Image 1 (cartoon, rainbow, N blue to C red):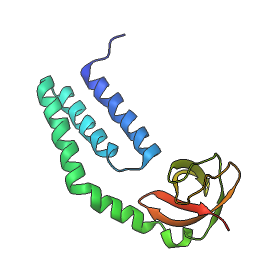
Image 2 (image 1 turned 60 degrees about the vertical axis):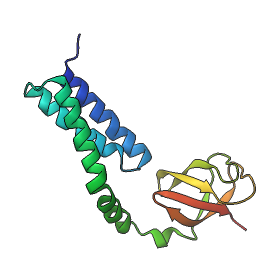
Image 3 (image 1 turned 45 degrees about the vertical axis):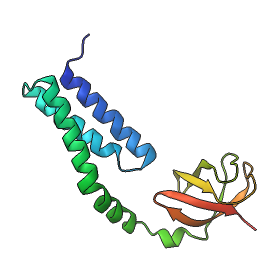
Length: 141
């Protein structure tokens, strides 16, 4: 079974949306929208270079125009201050100034160890701040 270009754009867009859900950086969503625009252009019979140009324009315009307002609005709706001071248990070890994944409120989050010592799996840490959608953690004293 051979995929046409329209289907490839759709699959790429869906893959990017899934990647966005895993990272939360608000970049891949706009590239995904560019892919969906290119899929629409492909279904209307546009040439491949036109599809690529449309995908690029939509992606760059989305990031340049919509990323910051969307990110600000979404992060404002999250009660960030309520998270600071909460304790969580580490799912895996993490070195100083390195990132790891932690489970917090039933969701997987990126977390950065701000401390100067390595943290072990199962150790209790405190959320001391947020950097975008990354928890900033230190060993609980």
